[in-house]
Length: 211
Image (cartoon, rainbow, N blue to C red):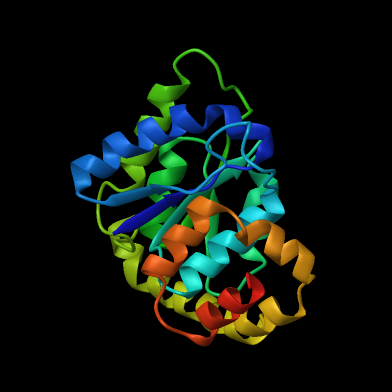
């Protein structure tokens, strides 16, 4: 599994703490982890809305399997990610949230409230969150006897999102192009994206935007 960490501006100073906690768990599971920004407060600005856009591009081109993001409350990033097709992002505040999201909702992204109660020992809490998130294969159900109903509901939600959302290529064409270019014109994102994204009209469009 390929996992991406994407921090926005207000929480950029915590990137190293979050990355180290996530990497310790990814290393145990044998997952590949990529730190796609903001890696420091000196990086070019990245908002939680742009987090949603970057996450959607990565997930829709299969460059990444799972995205870890967040903001001060986690709410903005969660809403931004869920505004795009083929992205299912949960708001995760503690290890129980992480485990239940993975087992019941089986999404492909989480948003964490990095400013709420973030203090002494927070790196331990983050590690516990990531351990529970990736503890067992997604979609196992909780309680287990509810698995079939939960899997059925997830399929229904996925089908509904295909109706209620435009496709990703259309979104990229209709979105403000300056906003799009500002989000994607980042060295660590570009290098990763063009090396890992599947060949598609989305990838070709991104390439042309950056010309």
